Length: 79
Image (cartoon, rainbow, N blue to C red):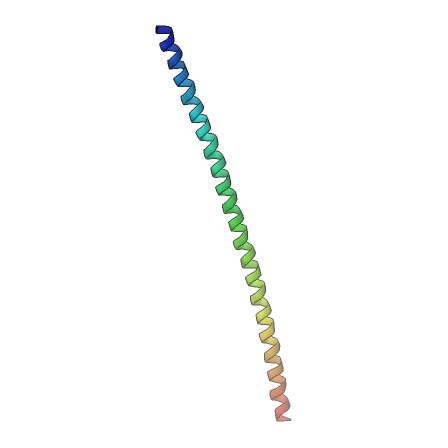
């Protein structure tokens, strides 16, 4: 009976070690996906910021052009 108890004890240790290893692997994969997702999310924010800045620049250029035309009409009105 003592041998069976030792075998059972070793089996429990193996099961605990396997469970710990499996848990660690699952956590690593889960964390990898979370970090990867965050990285993609961050890239999306950066991409959005770039597009928004491009839009702001285009709006500014448009406003400058409109103001130039208004200035020319103003000058032409005096002539």
